[in-house]
Image (tube, rainbow, N blue to C red; front, side):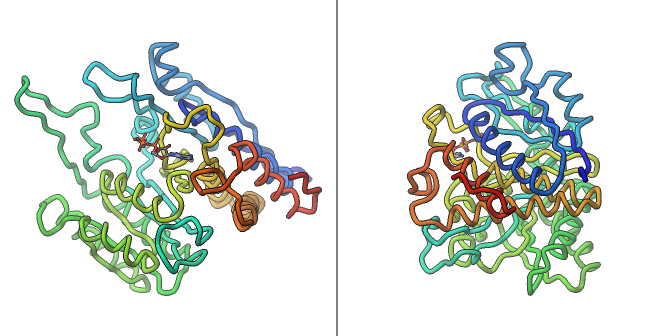
Length: 368
Ligand code: ATP
């Protein structure tokens, strides 16, 4: 029997975006076949290259397709040489967060193999945390709208609202419950000792957190957190923070598990979600066949989890698990992985290997 059909808007974007998206579609198609899902992919233009061709980085037609789709899969966007007159880069992936109100930036960080981390004495799975980045306010609230007064002063404001903080903090506690680690914990990351906005963030964290007595509460100032992440990453479960802090800590966390090519993400709202790697367009390696598609493949798995939970569809959840298991299987082999993992596989070989592992685990022929 054929399962439910999902319409997925695919936005490959710029730089290595299209390279990693192609490999992700292989894994998604293999998992869909194994679990009887129907995934209908439709590609849409978006990004800095799209701006050069059609005058806008986020065409109305693309935005409408994202609104109508069941979910969006995105590669990466922005090119260093393509900028607005004020000098900022085109960031349609950030614009999409605002347009679709994707307030929860969910960024799981998982160590797949001890060889991937610069830290000593860490085993597979010993780093297993989620950074929850508030996605539509904080220091990004004034994006494209900061003030520049003559050539003397420029101001971007930190905006923290009660409703915006309540919903992301609630998401953090619900996520800790879903993960079910022992002990379940949410860490509030802020700078409450200095900024009014951050003390406000913490007070809301406390009030919402009190409704979840089974989940431990922890606090860390953002500067101290940078230290804790390196010294005791295994102690964290879910961490919630404002937008810019989340942006920075995501890159640090990715560095603990193999780099940007290992860091997936989901930008999630109440009615829509966009899944994409945490990395950018990596202009330094584009076209070399060396980009690591794992972050995007894992983002595709998150997309299936989200669809499965949203539509009470166990087949979609199982397909997501299947992709993660396939990534684990492939990365467990010595020497596997792309050059960023000190492996010798190309982008295409990595994508093929994951898709083959999905098929093999489903009982098909392993043609890797
Ligand atoms: P953005 O500001 O758009 O997030 P960025 O300037 O932080 O982007 P990235 O494009 O994420 O930069 O690249 C940072 C570094 O990580 C670069 O050296 C890049 O080559 C590397 N990198 C990023 N993604 C990958 C990937 N998928 N595979 C291998 N290396 C990657």
